[in-house]
Image 1 (spheres, rainbow, N blue to C red):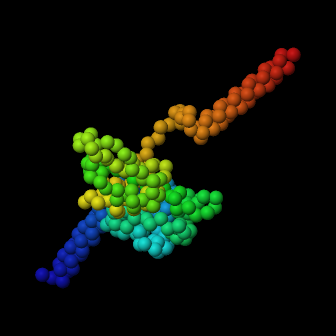
Image 2: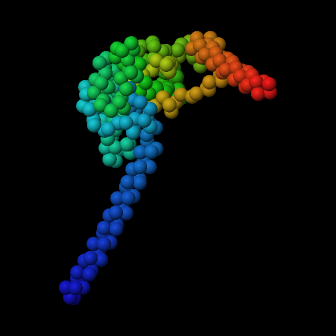
Length: 264
């Protein structure tokens, strides 16, 4: 076999190897994109995180929030995690958010992906304002709903009797016992995940998920007569409608006046 033939064969195999490598790399990139697109909705972000779509375009993946977390709750997504690479998140069943009063992860964010105003009250840091997620109880597998006494999630909640309450009901099956079952208050739950971490079942029967994934939206056309905020909203809407109507009537009157002048 001549040197020319050997060189041609070597070049042939190198070309195939390069093409195969590029195809495999393209497949991995596409697979990672698809996985990230489907996983985004399930991620729990640090306190103060802005809306997910804005978060992804704002977060510069610097890792400063991760470094600031004293409990190692936050981690950066790495290749193979099926999450947007380099972005911070946490898994409550492993390490929940321990609700630091000084919220060290938020002030260090240089990009605004973590908005300090979302965890503040009257310009004072307030971790109880955080909305990292919302706890959801699986009543089918939570042993408290079986009649077994368990208040692990309730006791673990840093907002005791505020974010999680125990609801009393009679156990009709036995006739002499009671159920004490956990109920999550959606307006108060911060999504810290301490309840999920404390759950005694093999797979947690109380799970924290992103709020947008759980909460519904009734629509602005529904009004709660007992809600002062709704009353104010209706009054404002009525006032705006009245102002618009008056403005339109004045415009019509002006046009009519102009028409009368032209006729004269």
